[in-house]
Image 1: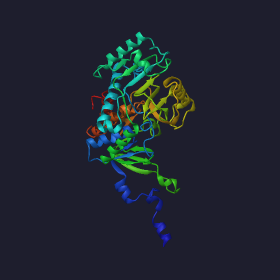
Image 2: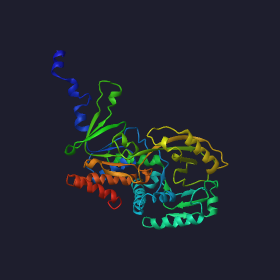
Image 3: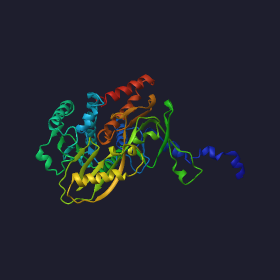
Image 4: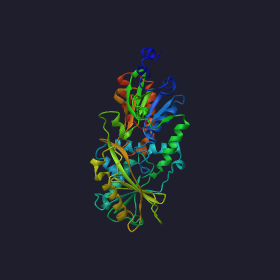
Length: 436
């Protein structure tokens, strides 16, 4: 009898080598929207879709147990941009482009705080400062004052008052930094700090409260846009790890797809202008009597440190080894970490004993300029990209997610031709703020 059944039923063909039941295919694999990536941008996209379209089904696919790129690895800086960063941007970008970028960060932080609540994310404004070292071209006091006024004048179109204030010599000396890394100290009046862990916990809780489905351990292998028939997303089959006969990926189907994978987008899309940037970070054990509060940057933002729970968190140094750090590999760089230790010991808290508690690295995404990639993929009306946050995901991630949701939902109301999608694409990117 068994031989007759084998002749009548082609088991491998019927099961498609997936071992998916009828119920899984019918009810557990089809969604209105799928979001790839459960970081800040991904969760904001999912939540924003539900805010506008509560009846829609939304699935977030995350390859790890939790987002593991930059969203959970960052230093918790709520930044809009330091003086030297903005001056550097003005060398390669127009004034309007710089204004749009700073405005997006400012508005994005406002959305993050409003959506999750300051207490829930540990938001504080204990001051934000930039250290100007003795070798900087801005270490001349008159030149520095001139540049501060220039940038403040420009940013008055964004902020209600001056963004930057030059600290007095007495104020600067009170911090105890060495003269080598701090010949002048600039205060940024519109930056703060958050608790990254609390923020991501609250974002996940909010998504779940909107009935967003989140599947962890779901590594997306590829996707296919079938146009009017929606998008097929292929996910690595977990059964294949223990059963060599179940080798084909799992299939998920959706009407619309958002790709929010930042530095890892190259795993899904070839030729995209994204260069990963790995950031090395350390945190000390609690330091008795530590008076340091707030957040600090120096060397055009390549170094950054802050106080957290009586400890100092210190990261950066990517500019010491750009080539090695342009990777998505999670690996510590001893040379950079040793430099961080040395700077902390000799210049940030000199004559203070400390021990390092933990070291880690996160992966950011950069490109030819600092503008994020927010666009439809290859003229599709079904697939959007929100990637390349430029190390500013905390600031702009929530806003980018809201914009992606608007693009996907609004595309349903546009004619299905290339011109309409391209026009929508250009309009949304060029008017990032006005569309929201």
